[in-house]
Image (cartoon, rainbow over all chains, first blue to last red; front, side):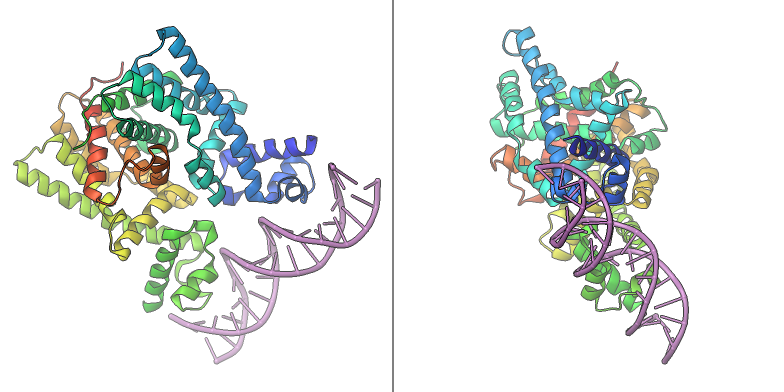
Length: 207
Length: 207
DNA sequence: GTCTATAGAATGATAGAC
DNA sequence: GTCTATCATTCTATAGAC
C-alpha cells in the first residue's frame, strides 16, 4: 500500500494549493514518484481518487468534532451551553485550517476545496451524508429547547455557511476591512464566528 | 457582435447547470452555433470568456442592489433600519436565483458558480473588487452606530456567507432538515437569512 | 497482485486560408 | 470576422512485464 499512500498524500498536498482542474495526474504521480497509470489502477480515476481522499479526511474531521462535543457534554453534565456546542462544530476545521503544522493545514485546505469545487460524486456525498451532524442537531435542540427541529437545522446550516465563508473568502474580508481582522490566532477566528452566529439561535422562528 | 453575444449566452446557459470543467469549448460553440475557434478569437481563451461573463453579470447584480439600497434610504429619509439594508444586499441574488424565469435564474446560477469554482482570474477579481460593498458598509454603519468599521465589515462578510451557503448548499439543508424548509418562495428564503444574520449585528464586538 | 509502457479519445489553443 | 486543419496536452484504458 506504499504506492497508494504516496498517491493520496501527494494528491492532497497539490490539491490543497491548486484548483482540482489545475492539477494533472502527471503532477500527482510525479510528486508521488509513481507511474502515471498507478492512479487509475488503485483508484479507478482522478475523480474517484478525490472522492476517496474526501471520505478519509471527512471521517477524521467529524471524529474530532464528536470528541469535542462529548467533552463539552461531560463537562456540563449533560446539556452544554449553546456556544460550547457551536465551538465543537466550528473549532476543529478552523484550527486545522489555520494550523502552523503544514500537514494539518493541508488536510483542512483540501477538505474545503473538495466541498467547494466538488466533482458530482463528492457533491452528492457531501449533500447526502449528514449523519454526523445529527448529534449536533440533538445537542443544539437540548441547549435551545424553544426552537423547533427545523429551526435548529436551519441555524446549524447557516453557522456552517459562516464558517466556510470565513475560511474560503478570507482575502475578501481582508480587502473589505482593510486588514482589520487578524487570522493568525485560530481561537480568535472561532470566536468571531460564534459571536456572530449564536445570537441567531435566540430569535424566534421566522414567521 | 452577434457571434460574441451568442457565445456569451450559450456559455452562461451551460455553466449555470454544469461545472466549469465539464463544459467544453466544443459544447459552447455547438450550443451557440458558431465555429470552434470563435471563442478564442473573441475572448482569448475559455477562462477569459468566463471572466468577461462574470464582470458583466456582477455589474448588473450590483446595480440592482444599489437601487434597492437607494430606495430604502429614500423611504426611511436617510438611515434605513438594519434589516432593510440587509434586504437590499440579499434580496437581488436570492430572487434571481430562485426566479421562475429561466433567463434570470441562469444569470444567478452562473454567478454563484463563477464565485465558487473560480478560475484564478475570477477569484482575484472577486477578492479585490469590493468597491460596490462600500456603500453597504456605510449604510450599515449608519444603522448600527455602536459598531466599529471593522465590526461592520466582518458582519457584512458573514451575512454574504450565509446567503451563499443558503443558495449553494440548498440540498444539504433539505437532507438535514428532512425537507422542512421550502425554497419555492424567494421572499421566505430572504427572511430566513435576515432573521438569522440581523441579531449578529446587535452584539458587542468580539473581545 | 503490482507496476510499467504505451496507445486512444478528447480538450484548449493556434496558424493560416478565405 | 470566420473557418479548417492541426498541435500539444490531458485523462483514461489496456496489454504485458515483474
